[in-house]
Length: 296
Image 1 (cartoon, one colour):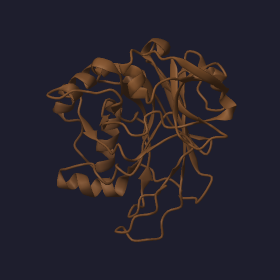
Image 2: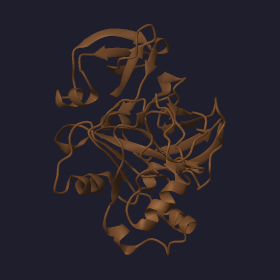
Image 3: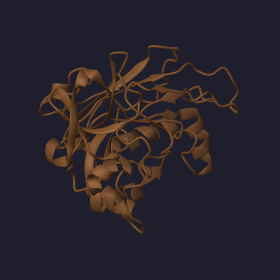
């Protein structure tokens, strides 16, 4: 199934669970995507809408938790080069590590992202995220953009704790969550474009740590609950350590994933196999690092 959270364009933004079937969305009788999973992955159908007549939202707007893993070896090698670290530590090969991000700062496709105050080096990371279903298993996969304020992150990491404020201001998800049976082969081509210019490319099949290993580690001494989000970590070329332009409007990142049925795009819903995520930045705030820019 291709699942989503949507709102008809003529209605106030609310967020209904839906299943995408071709060029239409079927409204499902579930309060949230998590409740859909706990209900056995099926629900009574309500009305249906043309995709062009709805707005697709972040599929899990307030997840119970957000973890982000570090599963690509080339990503950690690149990070070591950029930061001057001595290379990949032996422990990385043993442990599928992750950090916790902010479930209160989730953004969906075409949402504006507030530029983090105090940062001059905004970056992004193209990722795939697993959304947890029942019994700690993967309910579906979606696209994730791990926004990163690299200058804030560098200072925090020198202390030996974090990342914190370098990451927790925004994470973009969605719009489509695709169940594992629908998605099939996970060797998916991942692409990020900035204003149409390709900036990152990778393949999900290059993950060193498997999803099974990541979930096992995440669930150790605790439990995963429906709606939890776990990111894969960035592909090798994600972000490349370059700061992004800070145009006040019209600036966007689009992160499609190519599956067996072709390129994923919000504008061509019939070809959706996983999801694509498009987001825009607000203008850089003209304030000091102690004053927060306005949120939505």
